[in-house]
Amino acid sequence: MENEEYEFWLSGPIEGVPDLLQPAAHALLQSERELKKYTADFPKELLWAKTAGRASVGFHMNHITGVLDRMLTYAKGESLSEAQFQFLKQEAVFNLTTEVADLQKQFSAKVEEALAYFKTISDSSLTEKRAVGRKKLPSTVIGLLFHAAEHSQRHIGQLLVTTSVLQSKIS
Image (cartoon, rainbow, N blue to C red; front, side, top):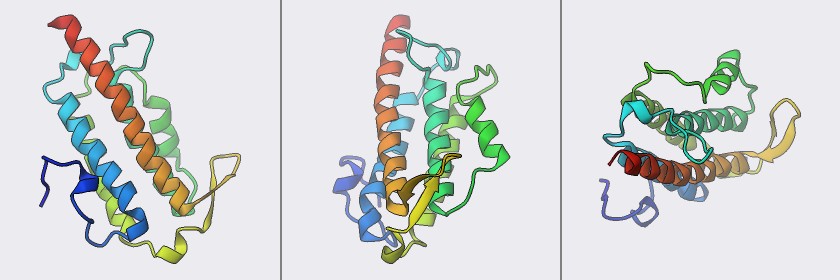
């Protein structure tokens, strides 16, 4: 049972997730919680607004979903699909029909998918080599999954600042 009083890393292990992936799982769950918190009641009309030349809230929400999706694909030893390339191209595209709640659900679904995948991974496969991108840059299963987790946390921090600045302008 989730206790929102504590960050996920202080809430004990997640059942079924290998010990070495607990920090990545905790970081993804923390990102999901904070994304919902920082975008709760966020005005739709500000979703694509930029401040100080920085990325929009909508971009951050799309981007962390897209990066997590791509890192999971690479961790599985697969190549990106055409749909994933299209999503990547659309991450920052201004879209007036986009709802904040839909972007929240999109990320939550991807976190749920990631945790389900984590539960299928054996400790022995964590150091298996994986290729990233068209250039086939070297990584490992654990490297990709930790990158997905830390990358989402980094963008959550940026999202917090952006939502705060934008909302302060309308208050």
